Image 1 (cartoon, rainbow, N blue to C red):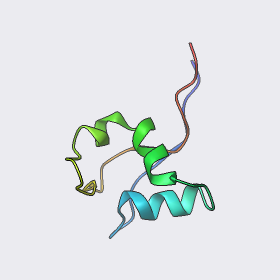
Image 2: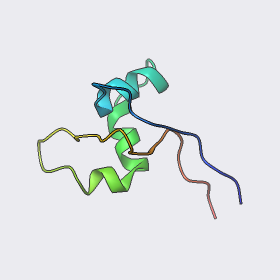
Image 3: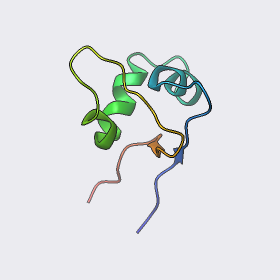
Image 4: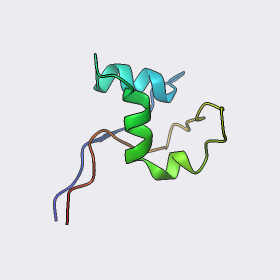
Length: 66
């Protein structure tokens, strides 16, 4: 089993800030991160930003195919 790359939010980070840092220049990077982090997507309401906790694990790459 391989592990996925991840990060923890820095103080003041939101998903857009993490996306800009780990996926620079990629269109819809925050949406991409959200699709890889369903635990965060479940917390997000329609049209609301995702509130992050300092203990949140944010995966920065997709799951490995089975």
